[in-house]
Length: 400
View 1 (cartoon, rainbow, N blue to C red):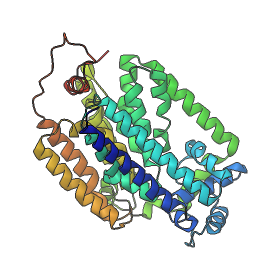
View 2 (cartoon, rainbow, N blue to C red):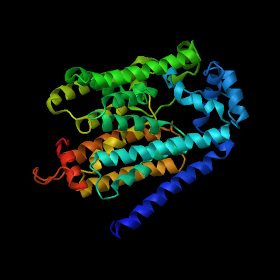
View 3 (cartoon, helix red, strand yellow):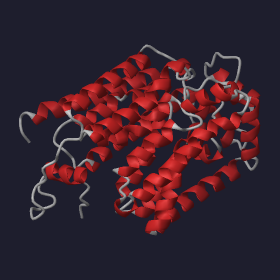
View 4 (cartoon, helix red, strand yellow):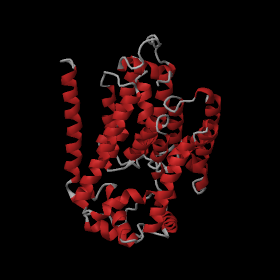
């Protein structure tokens, strides 16, 4: 290990530790935890432990009030019963210690994701992957106690294992099922790719994991899906401000036609299938699949800036191929978004409407202007250096 890299690694470790300490400092105060999205999962977990309805407004509000929640309306967990398994462990903890465990789990998921994404890039010797810790949607997740980072972990595990361990890759998609509406074009292409490439082990892994999740949900609350539907109707989600292009499209055409929010997703799925079919002969999820991921979040009928944390694999893919000018543009975009997060703008603020399109436009521009890559001779050892691994990945050459 060179003397130059040692300080960098020390700084990186200190940065990661500082982030963890900051999160725990917020989480250790129950009243502060009650103001974060964590309180929805904690209250749902306490209901599920007793086989009660996790969407019961009066019961949820009473639990949240006991933890220091100040609003007069219950703050529901808006995820479907397939997400019960992730809220269940919080049901045995107090709000204070539940917040600590939740924060540690989010931080561990983030560190694991960034580490695996760094490996996917060929383990380059630079520290560009540390950008992941200050990527604005990621930071928004950490501050809000949101589980968008678990979605990121699911996508990252799939990308890392889909060739080497297909069953694990398929099972990891259960994390994406926490918010399936974010992955509509991605999921359509995934199913088409599985059928064309006959990657049935990935489908089997996903089916087993989802079946176990649904079985657990049924055991905890046999009427979970009807309770979820009743909550969605009572919450009047159609009247809520959600900073997405889908909502903007609905409001521009007819605000009372809720189905209009799914029109962008429909066309996104059509485009994604066409994109896949045109590239099916040399399809790689770590390459062509990243554009599909970006489009999926862009056209999602329901999404927040915290959900954009799932875009980190695509951001990394472009960062490691970007020119200096593209890196400067990214710094400007990320800097503006970071200011919005740090000044405390609520995630339902319309100011966040620009972020998802900005990541997509920057990605396309950065990949279009990627510099020519000079790879070493293929006669050299495939694992001779991280730089060579990164070079081969960026050139689309499959490593053994």
